[in-house]
Length: 310
Image 1 (cartoon, rainbow, N blue to C red):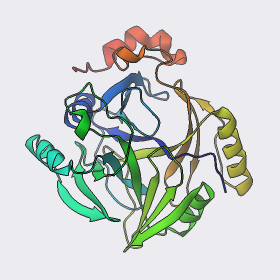
Image 2 (image 1 turned 30 degrees about the vertical axis):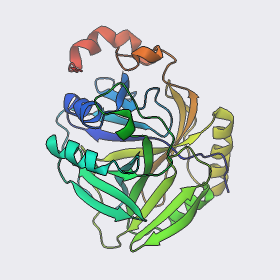
Image 3 (image 1 turned 45 degrees about the vertical axis):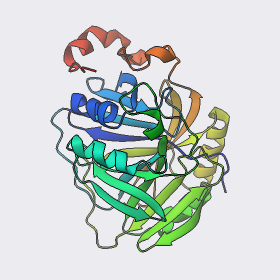
Image 4 (image 1 turned 180 degrees about the vertical axis):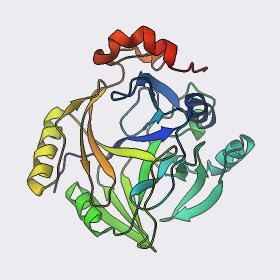
């Protein structure tokens, strides 16, 4: 069993409109935009990062806003819901806030003994806020949401699969132990993690396959401390029979990727070097930052990319 993985690092999804996406995360949820850069493989598309004040691993939601992309279809083989942690007793605040802003799909419920508020993002993305007692991670204090009610980071994700057996075994190999079961849901958690510690698997054998598009999660990333730990994880996964990419420099972390038995794309990302490597912490997410290989395209990209008004 691997011991290097310490919870989630980030979740990356797709959207249809950059401005709408920015407004939802910074104005409705009160997160900070911590990086405005571009897709490494399609530099005419933004890659937007949101999180706490410094983009702590376990707090970072990222998006590729592809203009005019069709909306995805929910189904099996995907991350169906991304769950954020909020303080105990704050769901009434969030219910009122999100309702006032016209956020769709508001649905209070209880899961694994935790009160949560489910809702939809602008592209039909599945989200929930869950009250977590004792989550000491600081919320971003520079946005419209008071610190006492603010999002602390991820609590976890829910994957929807037709068969959860092989993926459950993979999670256990990655250090996530099964801790509870509720109907079709099984919860896995890593001990001593970074707060973004849970992965739930929902098994729906007859569900149609998910179709990627706007509102779909592209991949979910797990956190390791540094490159040495990442190389240990990569070797172990290769030895177990997984097809794992070489290490890829993503400017703010190093990444490896592999496809899970249930079809979900997993990434293992390093906590180093962080989002302040090319911007001062006080000004994270303000300027357009380009990967080195696309720096020569700046003038062209600044004309192509739609402006984002903060």
